[in-house]
Amino acid sequence: MTLGGSRDLVIVTGGAGFIGSNIARGLAEDGLRVIVCDWLERDSKWRNISDIPLEDVIAPEALLDFLERQAGRVQAVIHMGAISATTETDGDLIIARNIRPTLDLWDLCARKGLRFFYASSAATYGDGASGFGDSEAMADLLALAPLNLYGWSKLMADRRFLSDAAAGRPCPPQWAGLRFFNVYGPREDHKGDMRSVIHKIYPTAANGGEVTLFKSHDPAYEDGGQLRDFVYVGDCVNVVRWLMEAPEASGIFNVGTGAARSFADLARAVFAAAGQEPRIRYVDMPESIRGAYQYFTQADMSKLRAKGYSRPFTSLEDGVRQYVTTHLRGRNG
Image 1 (cartoon, rainbow, N blue to C red):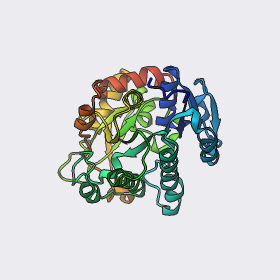
Image 2: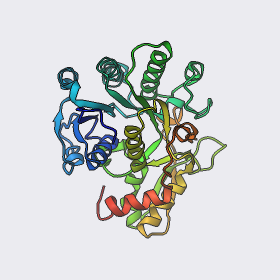
Image 3: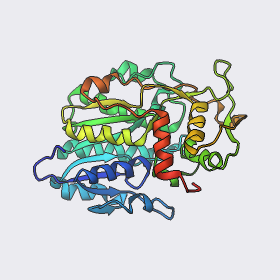
Image 4: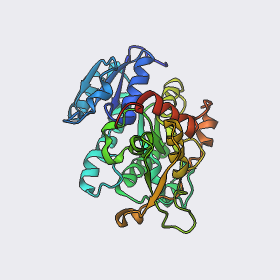
């Protein structure tokens, strides 16, 4: 890992959540001293960090003060904390939990000389009409039209930070906005309805039952033929690890596989990993989400590759098999 002199700490916000806890574990395995910043509340998130050797756990409301006092020991802030529900409709809550903390951390990291990596999202691309290229041109950013508040909150931060960089305003010495596509893998048990389809259907598939997927309400796609770029969480961790070793890499980067796969493919992969024949039934998509549904996402990975990231991404079948065999098998959720 690239260390900054006496800067021996890495802070992971949202570090008890899904992607954040996987990042925290990976960096701790690499020998870094990791501080998790998160609200554990009364759900099972604490289990995500129970097997990680952590330096400390701090509450989000204490983070800015901690950084003001301890910035000389911190080399990077990896900001994964946010409301991740694409169904959230409370705009004021999104500002308070997603936008304001991200902007405050950016400003502090710029002032204190801390590296700053944060979770953006493929939700910034909306229905994909403008493509899925992680362009940093402001005209391209302004052309994007997210379908929900969550996507807008991520795009707002992307626009602000790229504007700062283009105008020569203070920026962190290294920064990266990671546009995660459809991430799946271990440590998502606590996410309720926002967990991956894999997690939702595995218990039924493992018992040889019939799983349900949404029908298509777009004639261009058959039932189950809706396409997503499904990316294994371990690959997301590897991108962060690479960034820690590549201090010259800054900007907005897609994090997907570059290969769109159907939900039917995903379900078949789950049945195969469970050793069962596929049984799939299609049901109507709820009216409440039809107008904000993405039928196709596929990350353009050329920019990350051009920056020097060379590791292969895990195929859907291999990722599902690994997830099932290391985490889901023998569990009911």
